[in-house]
Structure formats: structure tokens, C-alpha cells
Image 1 (spheres, rainbow, N blue to C red):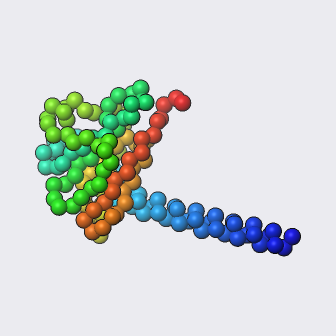
Image 2: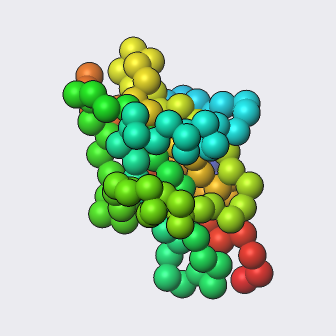
Image 3: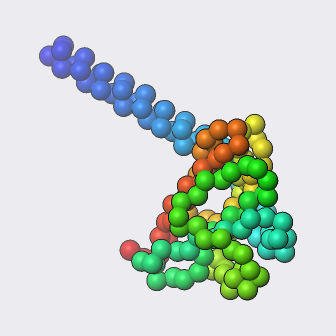
Length: 150
């Protein structure tokens, strides 16, 4: 009986430790994505030539159309690693045709020592996160979340 009790206590302790570590890791990723209290979308659209601009579209399984997020990367030597779903926005026509058809949130992408890498304009329902790779590199992960009937 005593042996089973000890095993259960060890399992509970390990579960708590891994839970705390996981939450701390998630908070660290969110710390590098600082939400701005006001919507910066139109300001970014007007000054889009000052940035490297990327968009990510909703997945094909979504019946809603339009973009899910825009990334405005500051033109410098810093690197934001993206997966292959992000599409460069290179022309005024492409920028004008692409919109997020829902309410959006704006966030600063911060890296090593709180350096500004760029801005992310995204749907509030989605879950982006930023991980620091090294002094000049961050990785942006973007998870689309369905927010309509299942």
C-alpha cells in the first residue's frame, strides 16, 4: 500500500513539474509577441513599402475567405523564420485585394533584448507565438483557429 502511494505521489509531482515548465515556455513565446492596445493595420498598410510584407491565407478547409494575418517585417539584417504558408506581398494590387475580414489584433514581434523585428496583424481567434532562435533570428509560428460552427 505504501509503495503504491509513493508511486502515485511521484507521478503527481512529475505532472506538476512538466505542467509548470510547459506554461513557462508558452508564456516566454507570448512575451516576444507584445500586443498593441490599438489597431495598427491601416497605419501599416499606408507605410507598407517600408517593410517586407507577408500574408497567410485561411486554410482551404475554411469556407470563409481572405487572409488570416499580415506580417510587416522591418527591412534590416534580422531574420524572422516563417513556414511555407506565408506568401510575400510585393505589389500594391496584391495588397489592395487581400484583407482580413474579421476584427484584428496588432502585435509587435520582439526578439533578443526586446529588439523590434516587425509587426503582426492577425485575427483575434488565432494563436501566434514567437520563439527566439539567436541574437538575430526569431521563429514565428501561426495556428489558425476555426471560430464558427463545428
